[in-house]
Length: 375
Image (cartoon, rainbow, N blue to C red):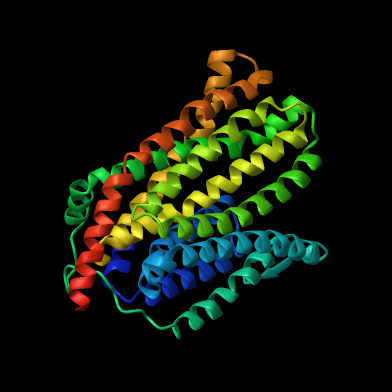
């Protein structure tokens, strides 16, 4: 759904597409509070995912037109901070609201039975309409880097563009696939790893993991911004070069984490890997926005994010399969994590590094075109 919706980002004013998506999410979330069975609740959550699938393509596309290339990593870094802060705030407010409605009696209205937790969905969905309304007052930035004025570019042309510049796009896409498989897979199995290897309780795991994830991701967004901007003063290929270096730095942290003698030291290594992983997202996304023609930017971004979600969904299965089929013991989960991290993260760094020189040449070409058009 994300790729077809991203076509709207490439064709229409992006603030309207984003406002429509936010309205849909808010409305469906609130309606989900009226669900009377599992199927209805499942369908509402699925529609929410569909409504939000154009948000990242639309947001990144607007940022690339709002800010000059030198400041784009900073803008993307702030966007990442908003995403992280929103997730943390959502978890906190969700728990607060659940505590508040726990004592509310079951309500019967127009044949519907509404429990306390359903009120939470209706409460958190309502502000979406206000946010969507505020977004309509945002200034739509003029599209820069258009190659086709006022026309809808077919998907075939988008795929042709990716293939034409495959020396840049393929390293980014394939490298992302390797890294997503590793990092999302680790996210699935890390609680079990801490429990099996160090005997930690679920409560202890939750307390430590929440702090580690929050701090490492916040630091990562800052590090990615500063590092990408620093390299950009020295290299045309700064964005891809930064992503390569950050993946290379993440690898040893993730490899040695399961080898640590204590859970605290393991999580310290996990935090280091998390900083590098989140930091790499800033230059990766900046690279895509920098070289992609404006009228294709939404769909190329959607394809890129699809690679992250699709291959990341196999990460948990991969680590679990290695544990069962190679080692045959749940206690050897740590070995599976070491093996997958030792293979996938170096592959991610190596693959993305193949795009450094082609990306630098493409940025140089784009800068010459921009300079000639400005004069």
